[in-house]
Length: 219
Image 1 (cartoon, rainbow, N blue to C red):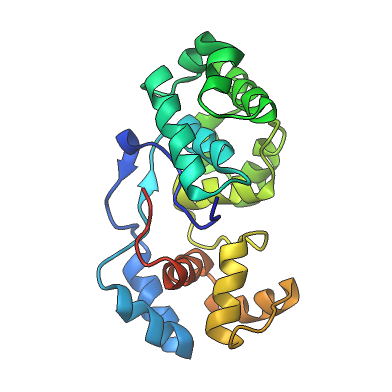
Image 2 (cartoon, rainbow, N blue to C red):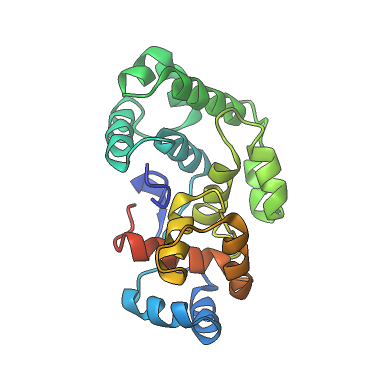
């Protein structure tokens, strides 16, 4: 999957502009010459969040390490088996039906483990919006198949956190390379150095770099 793709199902899109978006755009354009050129190219487009935590995380797991097309195909098949993508539906479907959607054995196990965590309330989804970014990440990475990148995508697309810098995201690194280094290879330290100018709006800058690679966000 192209790692800059939005995550989650179509039933829980949050279409409102994030409350910090306009202020962030103005600040980034004031401070950063690349952002000053980039941001106006996308008009009124903005980050579209996803309101259901389980759906968001399930979509992220489905999309790991495959193309966007393969991820979308598997997700659409999963929606037929589990139309509401609830933990109970996923558990009821079981490994055989999930695998038939095009999920690998490992991803099937991950989705079932995720559903089990939610159903058994071993994660505190109702408290995440009150928790610090790193505290949410620490809880999420305890679930099988959810690493730091997936947790950071969750912070961006579900919790709409404004200052996430997903250094493990190839789209972010590629966007920095193309826009700031004329396509030259970029290290994590290079990315951190560039992003220091974006604080506290690193999510917003990241989103525009994603758009520079793929102008139309996938929902």
